[in-house]
Image (cartoon, rainbow, N blue to C red; front, side):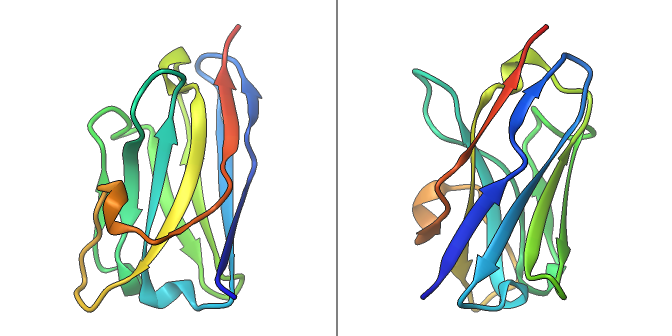
Length: 126
């Protein structure tokens, strides 16, 4: 059974950092495109970052470019999102999602992903 479990969310001050984890089970995430998404109250879900299978392609939304870093630990079958210089507008529930793809690109369109984690809350506030 394919499963994704996010962790690492919490409360951070503006300018602070958090590292989110997305632990995968039931499949090898190295061969899936993986995306990080977020949804703030009253807003649509937004693609934040993604990494293609075998890590050949990485994408960041303009809103997080230069502040967030996506990475993987293949041995642990885990994806990470390092979030630095956090802003109040980063407050949202963060989700990871996975999709098997034949190509070596990734997408930040949520409808292109079939497998989703349960989400982890990130709150940035002083």
